[in-house]
Image 1 (tube, rainbow, N blue to C red):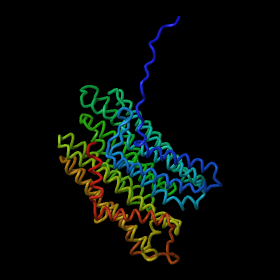
Image 2: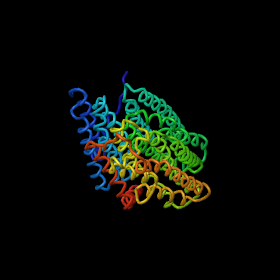
Image 3: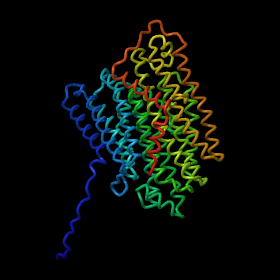
Image 4: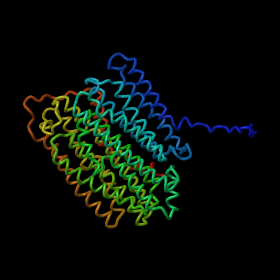
Length: 507
């Protein structure tokens, strides 16, 4: 027996905005080309996979610039994917950081026992997840983007297949990453259970109007933030970072410390600023306060004891992550105290500014580490002694990067620190003031171990057999670009200040 059915009603599909997805489309196409080059290319060279990857990343920057020039906010999938100034600025940052990583990697990977096609395929896949993350405004898309970022880096961390330290780095990173993903997804499920929504804007609206179920929401918010804390190596979830950074290939370490870490921070930015911002009853800012204070303090104290520069920079990365978490806490404190929206906007801008500046100076520092290791074959801090006598230009540039990380003017790091302190002080109250004091004390501690390396380069004797360091073109180009950025932003900080204003305007 058949039941009569009404004739099907054909609905015209909405037009697909190819321009909005152009950066991701270009990256996806580049990934396929690199993959095919690796499959059919001769040996491990894979048809110059590094050149294909570099051209693809620069090509993906073109639609980012055209979208920015267009000035139109674009929304897709019911608000789950948004292309605005905020997303475009972060996409641009991820692509530039990846381009610099490729420059750093070219000779390191080419001269090592690596399959180039695999390396650049994994690198580009991770950055594809980052560009999606910048536009993700939905719990599901955020989770998928974060896993797209993370899974390739698990493999990259253990890319030195015959090195036990690299194997350990990959395993530790994978185990901790899987645990963090589970916690984050569990927390998101609580938030979805309490609100019935996955789109961040709709979650924010439901939480603002909801009077009951706050215990469930609080648990969800806490677990979600803890999951992200693992991803950004915040205290006390940082213990994987030093061993992973030391064991991974150095270009991968640079990528993890900047681009991958930034991906985690962007996910945290999206969830907090678009979903949890109007729900002070959850007191999420207290978690951010603890993570910031602990990361700054433990990271700097750990860095003081290191004799290996990669491990020192790993603990430094934990501490710098703590500094970046200060504006998060300040944002929540300002909202809890009922301060004006401009105060909270200042805190948001501080996160973006610190993230951009940190990327430039940390990538530059790791590029110099690779350059010095080409001569010394060592990562010990003592191998930098007398660097000014043998390679004065490299010593000056490394001094710039370390001084910038310490926040010494007139280099870019001082402006990052300034915006961070301003956010904490503007938030006010005992919590904001105490966080500003802790940040000040930790800035002094950080300056000690950064400048200790500088002192060795300038004032300690070099080894008798030390020769001048010869750098390949790609590596020297990456170092020069990072150094120019550190000096230019330090002297004229309005560059990033204006970018931060555009990013938060109208979001």
